[in-house]
Length: 318
Image 1: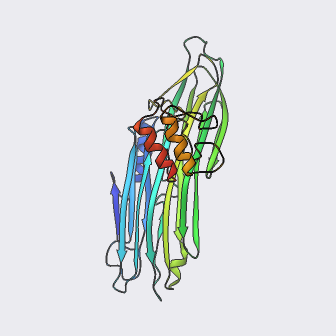
Image 2: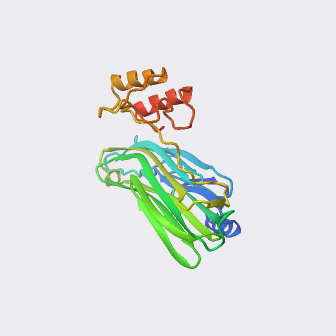
Image 3: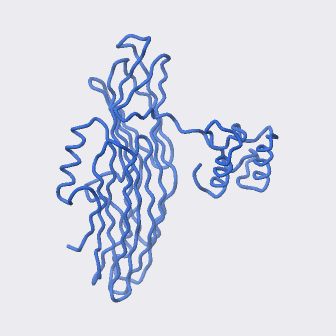
């Protein structure tokens, strides 16, 4: 077994035990855990990094780590990652590159030390409440699970899988499970005033550059920016939720796109001109419906709206 680095609040063997105990002690929590393998023959340093931040009630939890492995014959494998877990939003940023040599394979992997564990996850307990309706009144909760961003593993034999999952259940009634790749899934969960509803969300991702293991002189690289979110809308008037975490799971503000003027062409000079005209008080009829409140936060024509516009124009998130 190669040398490894462990980053977290517990040891390699005890982590799984502590995580399980933490969930039992509290009905809500967030955690981040993943493994990076960069080992190779003749490695001059550690070839494995484990980031394991056990369940904790306070969010967000940010699990960040980086490792570079080399050997005397010039092979190298380097990767960094940041997995962030909060109640609703989860994210994974990762990047790196590696090169193998003739007769010397190289590991370049981002996966999990604990079997099939998500890179970031949360668990929460909700209670359906009402100040006007009696206990037992039927209620509809609409859950939305989304995954956006991108992930590219450049290798001759890449293994690349990622998804976002959500599980919703309540004692005495069937639960629901949502799962999505890039995109959005929505489902309605019927329940009642006074009921407790448990939700668990996870962001899963595994990347293996298998082409580097063959001992041929090859290169591989990874670029990953994945963001998932769980939001909740109560469809019954006079009803709300409370949560162990304090989160309301409200949907994020609606942001504009780089086709600001709505002509079907994205990120053009005309979109920029239309945006600044709208900032000055002259929004075109086909322009973004939010007008100069580009980031959807309720404030119009602010510096934050301008910053969001240019982030989106450059291909980033709102």
